[in-house]
Amino acid sequence: MKKIQMVDLKGQYNDIKDVVNTSIQEVIETTAFINGPKVHDFQKKLETYLGVKHVIPCANGTDALQIAMMGLGLKPGDEVITADFTFAATVEVIALLQLTPVLVDVNEDDFNINIEAIKKAITPKTKAIVPVHLFGQCANMEAIMDIAKAHNLFVIEDNAQAIGANYTYKNGSKVKAGTIGNVGATSFFPSKNLGCYGDGGAIFTNDDDLAHTIRGIVNHGMYERYHHDVVGVNSRLDSIQAAVLGTKLPRLDAYNTARRTAAKKYNAAFKHIEHITTPKTINGCEGICDTCDCHVFHQYTLKITGIDRDALVKHLNEKEIPCGVYYPIPLHKQKAYIDDRYNEADFTVTNQLVKNVISLPMHTELDDEQIEYITSTIINFINE
Image 1 (tube, one colour):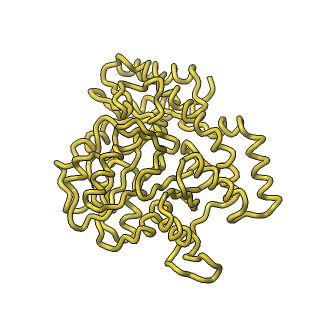
Image 2 (cartoon, rainbow, N blue to C red):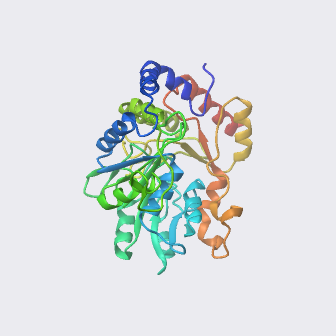
Image 3 (cartoon, helix red, strand yellow):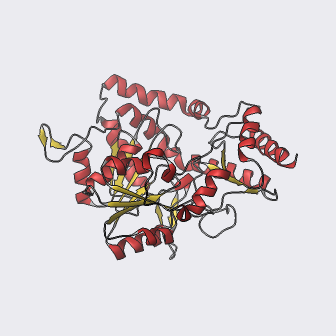
């Protein structure tokens, strides 16, 4: 059996090695390292794939979130509602811009931001909602957009983990994750479903004026060289990373299908195992249906109850099975973001999830032998 990786980037690279190397070599030979043809080509192809009018590439996913907020003109003291159960980058940029983060609880089943908690958190100072499409599927965007419209709020989608996922409206129409709110942001960190070989990110919007503002912000506030019209930053996707992404984008749907297939096999193995709750998709189907396109499984995350989760982590590590706990500490308990405004009673789900979630290896190269070894090791531990 091949050594199990949490994310097998080398295996994926070996499958596309020749075309990736050729694309990178083209950048080196032309020396068009910044804002070169590969960047513009990838931008256009991603716009087509997502069905969005504007993609603005940038240096990383954290920058993408920050620049999106800058582009919307949010001001110090404005309140921004987001999920307590997520990676710190989401709240980090809110704090960096001297906005006021307002953390709220998430759903027990899909880990995404809770709609009733959003409603409860709105005040006259609220200016934006940042739903995080956690682990690979969308938050309840139809409800979020209704709330935003009723209260005149911006919606910034944190789509770092769900690129390629579809969101299905009640009327059956579908749109890509990250293209529903005023603006969306994503990361191309190497372990993402669409990852480059360094740092990278992008911002999506259908708003022409907002896109124009953001294009200036990512390039020192310039639309014409040495003419600084807005306060900007230096945040550009370099051409070598765009070359990698341009090679992988046509394969993204296949990559996501491979992840779903692996998730189905995990689910099947754990189906009747006490103490394990497997991931569910948001479209009302139990488990992962055959036509699933709402979840792209950036992470495959179980809930473990009635046994020692941390002992299981230790056991898996001893068996050379990598795993992760995403996330071990709620944001409202992180030293940087502690605030007297928060009431522990408002975070019952998040406070429980940090104690019982565990994420298993998930990538495009997982094979049946590896999945059988992972699942049997977990089941044997539970049954001991």
